[in-house]
Length: 402
Ligand code: SF4
Picture (cartoon, rainbow, N blue to C red):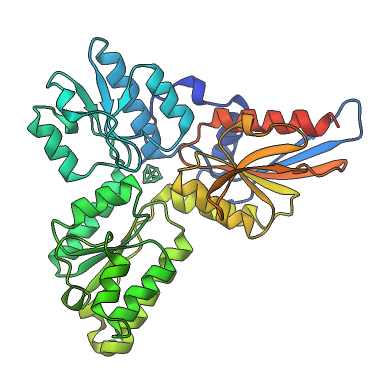
């Protein structure tokens, strides 16, 4: 899908854009995963900074497509009220910019209504964000005389997951969705997939193991329902609906987790039904991660092998793909998950999102006191390069002045 989008220039960072263009020229097939290294020296002190930028990071196809759609719709409809079904993407700056242009969100990420649908009129314009929307919301808006699918920015890679779900359903397999239960994309996938087949959402390996224990007969139906109460399609009957299964996933999950979950279900079915009957009980398909998730995670796998004092992941706290980059990096080095350069408060303090505690925290003494500092940096698929430029500037300012 090599297509270029009309994304506002203020999202492009001059430094990062130049680096990306150079890497693209040197390595058009994207085979070289080595990061780009930048060196900075202080002109007056003996301090120096090395920044290793991941080979792949920043805006993906779906995000650029969604931003282009939103800005086009705003330009074409200066007199109309414009609403996004939920946040455009999970980046606060991009969402704030849209709010400032007058675009409003109909609901929060968690699904709470921010605007009473009864106040909408058929003249209003609706945009479907990159994550897609549930069939129920689309139907409700259509019943009010609106046309939500006219400006549909659902990422084609998300639609591919729906297509895969449909194929599995038509072949008589129930669909296990590896995804975050409260994420807009997983909600939209559940809504689409359950038209074709019973569905179960598993968020992680622990939940997948619990479902597998039910399949093996090690936990009761009651325990199953208690555990998966809000994660199953209506009428889900685990005794019948877990006899034939296939796995799809939210496009931004951690590749290694999805692989582990799929192999665990496969092995469960293999143990119960044997090799000859495996195909009747487990649909052995590829994962449905998108290209951007794959590229960003493989680039970070290379980046984390490079020694550094710490790593920075720039992205919205709610960004699923960014959080997985943090998980990969923090296994190897101190890692700070920040939304923008303002989070780097001073040489002493950094504000960051701690994935383990799910809280925004201030970390003191975060910047090592030494002459030569090395930092590994990447960003999520919804983060403008301009913010990465600003983060680099801020780190330069603090490290070279000490
Ligand atoms: S992360 Fe992948 S699925 Fe999500 S918007 Fe980007 S390209 Fe589409």
